[in-house]
Image (tube, rainbow, N blue to C red):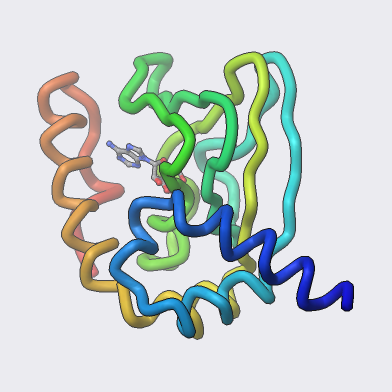
Length: 148
Ligand code: CMP
């Protein structure tokens, strides 16, 4: 049926999301059930620095960049994720994430993120440590990483 089809489609998609590769297939199928999909074009803004955020994104096609003070702090390709920081730390968005030409994302709301990504929360936190180094190297404010 339709539900099974949707699940299968999203499960296949999620296999390509690097951060989810450590989850077992059952956990991943639960994530698949809660996903929504959205497309962006041109230089559309996906996340705006300073705004409240309630969404965790996984990029499944296309390219995007993260910016802070007009400096590029990260580039994203298929299989990458962003938007976890505001949810982990309950703070405003630390950076802007912008589409490059075309993006397809799948996303989770805050509740699903907390409930379903518990098993990989440690990995998410560990990766936040890399953000600090990037910000320091570019001479940017690191208070969005510190604390909590
Ligand atoms: P969030 O703060 O929710 O929204 C902006 C996102 O940019 C952030 O989550 C991270 O996923 C992402 N990001 C990428 N690089 C950095 C960085 N160096 N510092 C902070 N956020 C970053």
